[in-house]
Image (tube, rainbow, N blue to C red; front, side, top):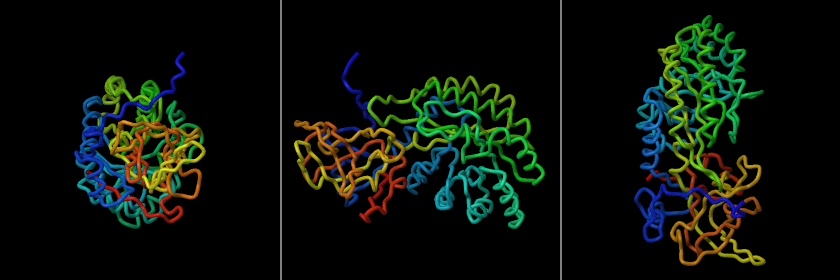
Length: 411
């Protein structure tokens, strides 16, 4: 067996010209000048478009693609995404307002998440957005608010299945969960929906996220579609929506390999025959967030100082965990692993060294790269954290120690 440690998967989504990363067709150094300051996030619109096209090629034609805005709710990103996908999913009133500013029909926007406030529910009902109901109590509140508004709410039941997405880094279903209604309680809830006269759309069944194992995703699709068809027998009307969630992962860490879409799509194609027969009016939706945007984005910060401490080189930058909590290892990692990190304006460099990249915060947790090999960097060089298009800025504690927030750009 080899003792060579695993390496990051090859990063080929961005070209390199004259040893400088190109994002959106712009050299990184020029992009930094255009934005006017560091740190910043940059998202490549062409890469987002290409990712959607890749999915369209490999998934059955009748599968609808929805974008889960929580992955990256930047308004410019959402506007671009709305022209490419078949629907949007929001998780807050602020996200809902961004979604409603796009050309997407409100009936193709869904609102998920536990603990929705009355004002959020009322806005969604008035807009005609589909409410993914997370509990029987929420169902009763929605019915009451609909009566007050004189509008019949569009609803779907978010189901907590009795299975999980195996090998998933974040399990959203199976066992006791704050999300959705336990599958065994859904038939009684469906009967109540009929009595309340709500506009029933269908089901949202989401079992996990960030999965790179084909067999696990295939099994989840099989179980999810079967559960949806079984629950449909108790529905108060035809199932028009069957959202089977997402879970497609991206390679972040050494040893990770990109998900192979071919067998995933082939398996779905095999399953869709029975689904179309038993649920002829249903739109089958795959709802993805991270998979659509993560690899199209980078986080960029500038080296302020090279510092040596007892033989170890530290690159101190103007960015850190307050902007990119996930890259620091403090967003769900049990054992910290490095995101792909490089010196963006000296991507290969003639001289290599092993360094740690840290931010300006007064905590040892402010670590973006721990003893990684990269080109020798000097003060003013640009450090790039790849795979940063999802759960970056909005998933980070930007108020921590009151440093300035980073800029964002879609290029």
